[in-house]
Image (cartoon, rainbow, N blue to C red; front, side, top):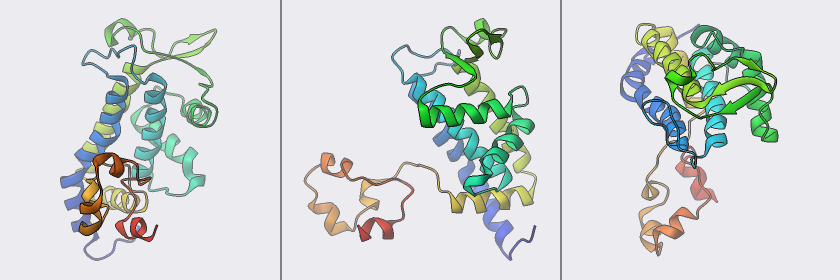
Length: 216
């Protein structure tokens, strides 16, 4: 891999200052979505299918950071390489299928999704095959992803090539992130908005550049 002048310094600064935030934005949002507690239980009225959907999307994203494969055709490779390295007890091909089926059909191919009871009560049930599919406990799924990402992070801290791959991928595929409404508009426009309701109604993502917002 050819590294440009100053790229390692930029990557070092990015990893040191922002990688923790990436973990919080991705995995933290999954936990918030299902209202996960420390023991791995999730509230019954949480967005449980939404949490599983975010889970597969997060694997795809961290797989991109790990491999640097940024094209749409690289999906299988992102899943395969990340799962084989950091989540090896999962069948990566079935997880890819789960991502596809959840996002396109709202259907959990190969898996029986559930969230009941805590981590300890599910340690021998999670990923076991049943006549309805492979049991996928939400608490364990989140924990395994978080553990895998943390292992990736520890390796990343000591590998300059990996840092550059991460920074390049991040620049090409900015994640959804918190943004301040006032950062999306020039000050006169922001001041003229009547309420936060009006601000929230704007169909803008936190990953869209300010220039693109202002063109619309």
